[in-house]
Amino acid sequence: MAAREGSEILDLLMPIFSGHKDAYGKDVAPPLPLSFDRTSYGDHWRDPSTRTADFPCPDFLGQPRFFRQLARSRQFASVQFDYSDISLDLVEKLVVEGRERAANGGTLQSRSIGPCIRRITVATNPGWISHRHGVELRTINDLEETEQNKRMMDASTAFFGGYMARLQGLLPVLPHLELLDWEDMIALPPSFYDSIACSHIKHLKLFRVSVGDGFQLGQPNARGSGAWPLRTLHLELRPSLERLSDFSTLVLCASILRSCAPTLEALTWNAVHHYRNEPSIAAIEAVDTVPRFTAIRSLKIGDVGLATLSLLDSLVQDGLRELDVDTEASPLEFLTANPQLSKLAIPNAAPKQLLDTSLLPLLVSSFTTLTSLSLVWEGLAISERALEMISFLRALEQIHLSAGNQYGWRHDWLIDHEIMRKYLGRLPSLKRIAFSRDSYNFNGINPSLVESYYEDKVVLSGNPRMLVQHLVATGQPARTVSDLETGHVRLWELTHLEKITSEAILYMDAVKKLEWVYMGQLPIQCVRGPKNSILPAAERDSCWTLLRNMFGGRTV
Image 1 (cartoon, helix red, strand yellow):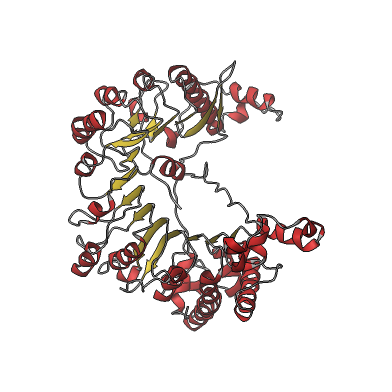
Image 2: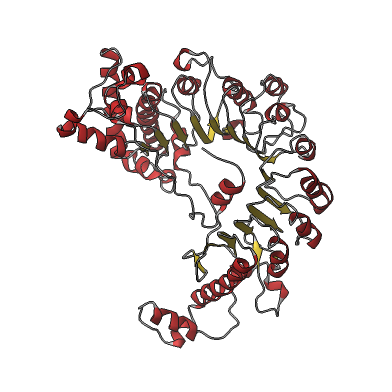
């Protein structure tokens, strides 16, 4: 990966503005470590005819190298490259191992790290860029132009020409690498895509990766098969800022999809809004050549702009089970042809007329195996008629409902939990319920406070002693009432928690198999036993990522 213009290093310093807190449920379970034989002797042991057992013979157990390699297989099953000292040292170690492997006919010593790696996450920490190269967004403009250019060019040369080039070279030679999660929002050259297409990767996530030029993926040659055997793909490419108004990533996306179509089981494909309304003719022609996806089971598409294209027809197959579509095209024609779906999500707000008079009647009449549903209404309410139709989807195990404003601080959907329980309680298999963007007016005296409920945190109960009692009960020093009057936010949080947990208890009574509920921005576990109990999270959370993963299809 060649060095770039110095200014491109600034892309790595840009923060991601996520808005509300989104931490709950984002932990990713590490992959299981590989067995000793696979991590010690390289590809020779990949041939089943040469393997005598899943574990080394007993004579190995007393040898220190066995225990050291066993520890490596656990420590390095999942690694993250963030440009830290540890990351740089690990890259250098893997480069040395790669040279040794090439010089010894593909075999490795048992003291190797490379064969232990199953998952790689690339997410550069901006702090390490600033630490190593003296480049910071808040101070770079204070420097003279000559010094600015020098620092940015030095940083770009070291990062792209050195670190990234070595990292790219490692991907095809790690024998057991299965998952690559790339989260650096930088433009990657064609050679990068060719290198991962020739690797052993089965699961790929490209998150908000920039594309600066129009090109297509070269012919993959993974393991000499001439195809790219990906199983899951999260594809989120965006034009670089310089090309945002006149450039489409569809050509590259189409070539990637074409290469992995025969084996792809789960696809998440998001795009970035363009200033131009239509993709280029070349992009349309490239997409139209995509073959049918015979293995696909989970499909999640957002903002790709497929209203006039036939790609969606190619992606929707008889075996499809999970569908999350956010395109300019109406989903009804695709749903009518695919009643076998078990998971359906339409993430963007849809008109009441579409949902109440077309979509829900279709689901009730044809979707007998639907176990997961996520719908958002454009208006400020969900009609009782719609909820009654939902109550006939008897196979549902989880449901997510929302209405009103979906962005920013305004939460204008005044939810009626009594009506919700009346109809959701009729679903015999329901285990998980989620309400997002819901708001409240517990005091019932000023409807105008609904939309700013979470923002203003108005406390009208006039009983700050409740917070004193809470502090005493948790072993913290009690403060005076006058002190607490200035800290009404905590009092509001406690009041909100009390109200929401009271509603959750009622849901447990109404929905007999309920295990988890999300409402009032609080995820709550429902524990059943001789005495039913609830376990709310310690603090409010938007749960944006969790809800998208839970209801919107699988992600890498």
